Length: 218
Ligand code: E4P
Image (cartoon, rainbow, N blue to C red; front, side, top):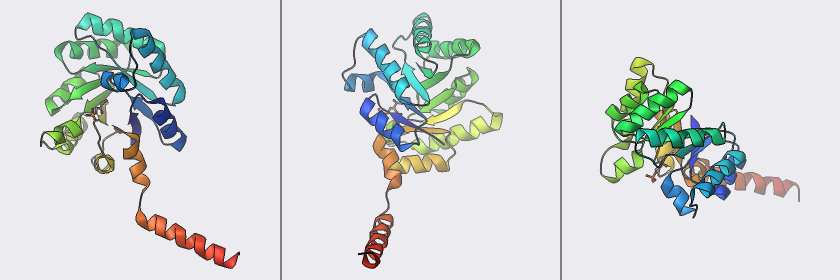
Protein backbone atom coordinates (compact mmCIF):
# COMPACT_ATOMS: atom_id res chain seq x y z
CA UNK A 1 0.00 0.00 0.00
CA UNK A 2 1.33 3.44 -0.93
CA UNK A 3 1.20 6.21 1.69
CA UNK A 4 0.45 9.72 0.47
CA UNK A 5 0.16 12.74 2.74
CA UNK A 6 -2.83 15.01 2.15
CA UNK A 7 -1.48 18.50 2.78
CA UNK A 8 0.26 21.48 1.20
CA UNK A 9 2.23 22.15 4.39
CA UNK A 10 5.94 21.83 3.57
CA UNK A 11 7.01 21.12 7.17
CA UNK A 12 4.58 18.21 7.48
CA UNK A 13 5.57 16.86 4.07
CA UNK A 14 9.23 17.03 5.11
CA UNK A 15 8.48 15.26 8.39
CA UNK A 16 6.61 12.46 6.61
CA UNK A 17 9.37 12.15 4.02
CA UNK A 18 11.99 11.85 6.76
CA UNK A 19 10.06 8.95 8.29
CA UNK A 20 10.99 7.06 5.14
CA UNK A 21 7.56 5.66 4.29
CA UNK A 22 6.12 8.42 2.12
CA UNK A 23 5.16 7.62 -1.48
CA UNK A 24 3.57 10.89 -2.51
CA UNK A 25 1.46 13.96 -1.75
CA UNK A 26 -2.07 15.03 -2.59
CA UNK A 27 -3.19 18.65 -2.49
CA UNK A 28 -6.39 20.46 -3.34
CA UNK A 29 -7.37 24.14 -3.60
CA UNK A 30 -8.63 24.15 0.01
CA UNK A 31 -5.33 22.76 1.31
CA UNK A 32 -3.37 25.36 -0.69
CA UNK A 33 -5.59 28.15 0.69
CA UNK A 34 -5.06 26.81 4.23
CA UNK A 35 -1.32 27.41 3.78
CA UNK A 36 -1.99 30.92 2.44
CA UNK A 37 -0.76 30.03 -1.06
CA UNK A 38 -2.61 32.11 -3.65
CA UNK A 39 -1.98 33.54 -7.12
CA UNK A 40 -1.13 31.31 -10.08
CA UNK A 41 2.64 31.85 -9.94
CA UNK A 42 2.85 31.13 -6.20
CA UNK A 43 0.69 28.04 -6.55
CA UNK A 44 2.81 26.65 -9.39
CA UNK A 45 6.01 27.37 -7.44
CA UNK A 46 4.57 25.62 -4.39
CA UNK A 47 3.93 22.46 -6.45
CA UNK A 48 7.55 22.46 -7.56
CA UNK A 49 8.71 22.97 -3.95
CA UNK A 50 6.63 19.94 -2.91
CA UNK A 51 8.05 17.83 -5.75
CA UNK A 52 11.56 18.74 -4.63
CA UNK A 53 10.82 17.52 -1.10
CA UNK A 54 9.41 14.07 -1.86
CA UNK A 55 10.24 10.99 -3.90
CA UNK A 56 6.86 10.28 -5.42
CA UNK A 57 3.70 11.48 -7.08
CA UNK A 58 2.30 14.92 -6.31
CA UNK A 59 -1.34 15.55 -7.22
CA UNK A 60 -2.04 19.09 -8.47
CA UNK A 61 -5.67 20.01 -9.05
CA UNK A 62 -7.10 21.98 -11.97
CA UNK A 63 -9.52 24.83 -11.23
CA UNK A 64 -11.27 24.89 -14.62
CA UNK A 65 -14.48 22.96 -15.05
CA UNK A 66 -14.66 22.96 -18.86
CA UNK A 67 -12.73 20.54 -21.09
CA UNK A 68 -10.53 23.13 -22.84
CA UNK A 69 -9.65 24.84 -19.58
CA UNK A 70 -8.80 21.55 -17.85
CA UNK A 71 -6.59 20.50 -20.76
CA UNK A 72 -4.75 23.83 -20.79
CA UNK A 73 -4.25 23.87 -17.03
CA UNK A 74 -3.41 20.18 -16.82
CA UNK A 75 -0.74 20.46 -19.48
CA UNK A 76 0.79 23.42 -17.66
CA UNK A 77 0.79 21.50 -14.37
CA UNK A 78 2.23 18.32 -15.93
CA UNK A 79 5.04 20.35 -17.51
CA UNK A 80 6.13 21.64 -14.09
CA UNK A 81 7.74 18.40 -12.94
CA UNK A 82 7.66 14.72 -13.89
CA UNK A 83 6.24 13.85 -10.44
CA UNK A 84 3.06 15.85 -11.07
CA UNK A 85 -0.22 13.95 -11.43
CA UNK A 86 -3.06 16.11 -12.76
CA UNK A 87 -6.09 16.05 -10.48
CA UNK A 88 -9.38 16.24 -12.36
CA UNK A 89 -12.87 16.44 -10.82
CA UNK A 90 -15.46 13.75 -11.57
CA UNK A 91 -17.69 15.80 -13.85
CA UNK A 92 -18.65 15.23 -17.49
CA UNK A 93 -15.89 17.39 -18.98
CA UNK A 94 -13.55 15.87 -16.42
CA UNK A 95 -14.16 12.40 -17.83
CA UNK A 96 -13.31 13.72 -21.30
CA UNK A 97 -10.16 15.33 -19.90
CA UNK A 98 -9.15 12.07 -18.18
CA UNK A 99 -9.36 10.29 -21.54
CA UNK A 100 -7.44 13.09 -23.27
CA UNK A 101 -4.60 12.96 -20.74
CA UNK A 102 -4.56 9.16 -20.71
CA UNK A 103 -4.13 9.13 -24.51
CA UNK A 104 -1.26 11.62 -24.14
CA UNK A 105 0.47 9.59 -21.42
CA UNK A 106 -0.13 12.27 -18.76
CA UNK A 107 -1.02 10.76 -15.39
CA UNK A 108 -4.25 11.76 -13.65
CA UNK A 109 -6.04 11.50 -10.32
CA UNK A 110 -9.83 11.60 -10.60
CA UNK A 111 -11.08 13.42 -7.51
CA UNK A 112 -14.41 13.91 -5.72
CA UNK A 113 -15.52 10.32 -6.29
CA UNK A 114 -18.43 9.18 -4.13
CA UNK A 115 -19.93 6.18 -5.98
CA UNK A 116 -18.90 2.97 -7.71
CA UNK A 117 -20.41 4.24 -10.96
CA UNK A 118 -18.13 7.28 -10.89
CA UNK A 119 -15.12 5.05 -10.16
CA UNK A 120 -16.03 2.77 -13.07
CA UNK A 121 -16.25 5.74 -15.40
CA UNK A 122 -12.90 7.10 -14.21
CA UNK A 123 -11.23 3.74 -14.88
CA UNK A 124 -12.85 3.46 -18.32
CA UNK A 125 -11.49 6.93 -19.13
CA UNK A 126 -7.99 5.79 -18.18
CA UNK A 127 -7.44 7.61 -14.87
CA UNK A 128 -4.18 6.62 -13.17
CA UNK A 129 -5.74 7.07 -9.72
CA UNK A 130 -9.33 7.30 -8.51
CA UNK A 131 -9.97 9.13 -5.24
CA UNK A 132 -13.04 7.96 -3.30
CA UNK A 133 -13.58 10.38 -0.38
CA UNK A 134 -14.39 8.00 2.43
CA UNK A 135 -14.33 10.48 5.33
CA UNK A 136 -16.84 12.77 3.67
CA UNK A 137 -19.19 9.81 3.14
CA UNK A 138 -18.79 8.80 6.79
CA UNK A 139 -19.66 12.42 7.69
CA UNK A 140 -23.12 11.98 6.14
CA UNK A 141 -23.77 8.56 7.76
CA UNK A 142 -22.84 6.61 4.63
CA UNK A 143 -20.32 3.75 4.76
CA UNK A 144 -17.18 5.11 3.11
CA UNK A 145 -15.27 1.86 3.58
CA UNK A 146 -18.00 -0.07 1.74
CA UNK A 147 -17.32 2.16 -1.28
CA UNK A 148 -13.62 1.23 -1.19
CA UNK A 149 -14.57 -2.48 -1.04
CA UNK A 150 -17.04 -2.14 -3.92
CA UNK A 151 -14.56 -0.31 -6.15
CA UNK A 152 -11.92 -2.98 -5.38
CA UNK A 153 -14.38 -5.69 -6.48
CA UNK A 154 -15.31 -3.93 -9.72
CA UNK A 155 -11.72 -3.08 -10.64
CA UNK A 156 -10.59 -6.65 -9.94
CA UNK A 157 -13.47 -8.07 -12.01
CA UNK A 158 -12.08 -6.33 -15.07
CA UNK A 159 -8.40 -5.98 -14.16
CA UNK A 160 -8.54 -2.19 -14.42
CA UNK A 161 -5.12 -0.68 -13.83
CA UNK A 162 -6.47 2.48 -12.19
CA UNK A 163 -5.17 2.62 -8.63
CA UNK A 164 -7.63 3.12 -5.77
CA UNK A 165 -6.46 6.12 -3.75
CA UNK A 166 -8.52 6.16 -0.56
CA UNK A 167 -8.93 9.87 0.19
CA UNK A 168 -10.48 11.98 2.91
CA UNK A 169 -8.84 9.68 5.46
CA UNK A 170 -9.48 11.11 8.90
CA UNK A 171 -7.67 8.75 11.30
CA UNK A 172 -5.43 5.73 11.69
CA UNK A 173 -8.24 3.13 11.69
CA UNK A 174 -9.24 4.36 8.23
CA UNK A 175 -5.69 3.56 7.06
CA UNK A 176 -5.79 0.06 8.54
CA UNK A 177 -9.28 -0.68 7.20
CA UNK A 178 -8.30 0.53 3.71
CA UNK A 179 -5.22 -1.71 3.82
CA UNK A 180 -7.43 -4.71 4.74
CA UNK A 181 -9.71 -3.92 1.80
CA UNK A 182 -6.84 -3.79 -0.66
CA UNK A 183 -6.81 -0.08 -1.40
CA UNK A 184 -3.69 0.62 -3.47
CA UNK A 185 -3.00 3.97 -1.84
CA UNK A 186 -4.21 6.04 1.07
CA UNK A 187 -3.90 9.78 1.51
CA UNK A 188 -4.37 11.34 4.91
CA UNK A 189 -2.97 13.76 7.45
CA UNK A 190 0.42 13.10 9.07
CA UNK A 191 -1.40 12.10 12.28
CA UNK A 192 -3.10 9.18 10.49
CA UNK A 193 0.32 7.79 9.52
CA UNK A 194 2.01 8.47 12.85
CA UNK A 195 -0.91 6.82 14.66
CA UNK A 196 0.23 3.51 13.17
CA UNK A 197 3.32 3.70 15.38
CA UNK A 198 1.54 3.79 18.67
CA UNK A 199 0.95 0.94 21.10
CA UNK A 200 1.08 1.21 24.91
CA UNK A 201 2.70 -2.23 25.21
CA UNK A 202 5.56 -1.01 23.02
CA UNK A 203 6.15 1.93 25.37
CA UNK A 204 5.87 -0.24 28.52
CA UNK A 205 8.14 -2.91 27.01
CA UNK A 206 10.79 -0.41 25.97
CA UNK A 207 10.75 1.26 29.37
CA UNK A 208 11.33 -2.14 31.05
CA UNK A 209 14.14 -3.13 28.65
CA UNK A 210 15.94 0.15 29.31
CA UNK A 211 15.41 -0.07 33.08
CA UNK A 212 16.78 -3.65 33.16
CA UNK A 213 19.77 -2.64 31.03
CA UNK A 214 20.50 0.28 33.34
CA UNK A 215 20.35 -2.00 36.44
CA UNK A 216 23.15 -4.14 35.08
CA UNK A 217 25.23 -1.30 33.64
CA UNK A 218 25.14 1.46 36.23
C1 E4P B 1 -8.04 14.12 -1.71
O1 E4P B 1 -7.17 14.13 -2.54
C2 E4P B 1 -8.50 15.29 -0.97
O2 E4P B 1 -7.47 16.25 -0.97
C3 E4P B 1 -8.76 15.01 0.48
O3 E4P B 1 -8.44 13.70 0.85
C4 E4P B 1 -10.04 15.53 1.00
O4 E4P B 1 -10.12 15.27 2.38
P1 E4P B 1 -11.12 16.02 3.36
O5 E4P B 1 -12.46 15.41 3.19
O6 E4P B 1 -10.54 15.74 4.72
O7 E4P B 1 -11.09 17.48 3.00
